[in-house]
Amino acid sequence: MLIELEKARARNNVVRIFREDLDGPDNWTDGFVVDANEEMVLLQLVDDGVHLNGYQILFLEDISDFVHPAPFNDFQKRVLALREEEVEDPEVDLDDLAVLLIDISEEYGLVTLHREEVEPDSCEIGRVVKADAVTYELEEIGSDARWFDDTFEYDLYDITRIEFGGAYEEALIMANDDMGDDAYELADEYEDDGLLVEE
Image (tube, rainbow, N blue to C red; front, side, top):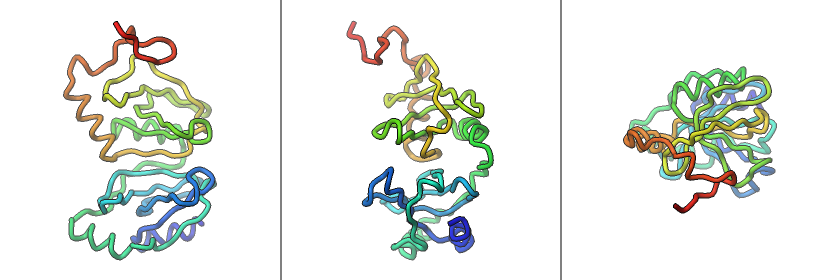
């Protein structure tokens, strides 16, 4: 698989990647291969509106199939060229997962982390403030663009998908930056179960 991914990168073609066990048979990812090694592949995503929309890192062991070139490769490349959108290498190192998360957090401000085998219907978004060979510590941001007061620790190898540099992460950063003193949640608004307390 790595050889084929490298061919797609060299030819600057869109690939379509399937992860049937995690996503089901009818879901896929379209993107350009920016980098790959024996464990991971880094894609620059092509969204449904045919825009480049951030980056995604998938684990090769989770990939059930991929198509190269993707079914609408020529169309997607033509539209992106007309829009003058070009593939860019974020220059992150795939060799060490813990270092990778820190680097993304520092360079892009936010990283979206999926743990689909543990929490299939949710993800965490934030900045990784600490990571080692086993765990990582995440300062999370909510869907209201406010930082949580506490950090949370997770198992490093529960991660199944990593995303960063996309329009949603950018929107959260913009909104948070605009909040000033309101950029953080108030700890006393939350009970231990995470539910909002009416005051």
